[in-house]
Amino acid sequence: MTDTSTSIRRRFDRAGIVLAGLCAIHCVATVVVVSALGLGSHFLFSPEIHRFGLALALIIAAVAIGWGALKHRRAAPFVTAMMGLSFMGGALAMPHGTGEAVLTIIGVSLVSVGHLLNLRPFTKRT
Image (tube, rainbow, N blue to C red; front, side):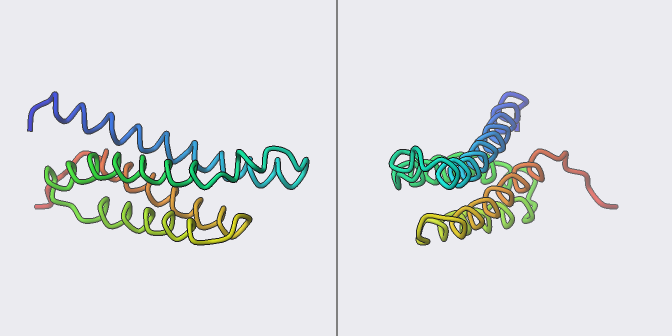
């Protein structure tokens, strides 16, 4: 794999980590803002935001994690990220609230770990 393609994959991994962080902030902020102030529930709880975020996470993970798996043949980044995406998908089936936020935060954490594992340089065991 060329240096350019590796650089692009690494950018996708970093974008995945940033997206996961933003998602976690959104979840916590939504619960806090809506619970404390009762504001923004229509916008912050909008199912479209969650569907769009999951779709974006799926695309970024598919490109970065899939590309990385093809390059370094390690299962850990792929399995970890897919578990996280499953938690995020499960959160969409939950009613809005703390349970949904917890599942989403678990999911985005696992996706972030998958991207971090994907960024680690591959070393052969001898």
